[in-house]
Length: 214
Length: 214
DNA sequence: TGTACATCAGTGAACGCGCGTTCACTGATGTAC
DNA sequence: TGTACATCAGTGAACGCGCGTTCACTGATGTAC
Image: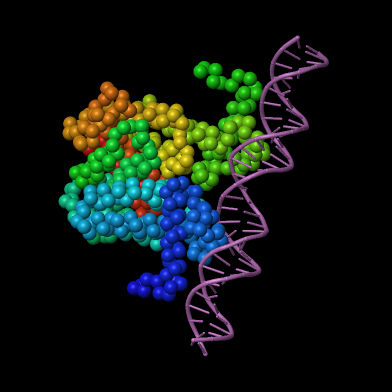
């Protein structure tokens, strides 16, 4: 695994090319959304003609899969970096928001409306689990609420997906982090707050603090 | 407005035809998502050939706009029906969830990832406001929490979009209803809970009760 | 009740477009002796 | 250092497809006298 760095000049060039193709793909997604992603358009922007892309990706699906993988990776890395620099749960929430605002379509590619036919490969869910685990760990450091909700007791018997050295209430809080953050954020990104003149950042902040004080 | 019922036989037929076209469009959206909506495919299913649809809709955009309008209308009607039959805030939440689960793609058409080029016409935001107003009214009936959050005080000065005979805290609670319900619901609809074996309905229920007891 | 005309639903051919993908091929870059 | 061969990046033409949309036209249905 340590030789992930390109070995021969050809491989190095190949890696650079793949990276540039992906960069153009992201650019295209950022402006027109993931559904408008076109191999030919990317090729034109990269400066070569259509079929050349097949030297680097088996097809459109593989490219999209790779982009989704990278997006999950990028999010996980962002949260990890926030945590490693001492951020608590709310710090991680703000890091997540910044990450989403930096490239809304990247966020939506992962958490937005799924493409009906497409099904994500297994390793993306693995990276997604990684993110979830970081959230659970972050909430583990917080004082525990004594009251157990109905969902908490339900979770006690349906928690195989989560690490088991953690109380169900903590899992619940991590889940709520996810759903509430996603709720405000995705409505903001989708433009559903335009017309209401309040500042979405403040609504977000209140929602984050609700996750801590509740 | 009372003569909205079709007058001549021709107009009646025309209305029926428009309705059937829309029905097929919904069917298509339900199975393949809104991005895959194709006029030619609809025409084939209705039993006539492509260009005939232009007798009923000016083009693809107008059809989609109409579908979005109907979706907003349907949601508003559902919530109103729930309220009129005595449902409180949580009853309205469950009605909303049932409405979403009945046709996930319909929910996603309205609250999902926006089509990057497309911009919704003004009257859809009017219907959306109608829904919001009903939520605000529902929360007005509830006992008021005395503490004002930072966002509450921010809202005091940015609330032109809302009725002004209602405290800012109530507006905030209606907004949180929206964002939290959307958070759980959209993640469920997008399939992000598959793999975790808990029951989304129970997570939803807990999230609804958080809106009341907090 | 019958005729003359207008309205309108629906057809079939066609246009232009962009898509993903395949294929045979050219040229340059690397490798082995 | 030079030659022979293999590897691989990239091209251009082509395939088949489905899309939204236009246009001229046919036939049926309605309306007016």
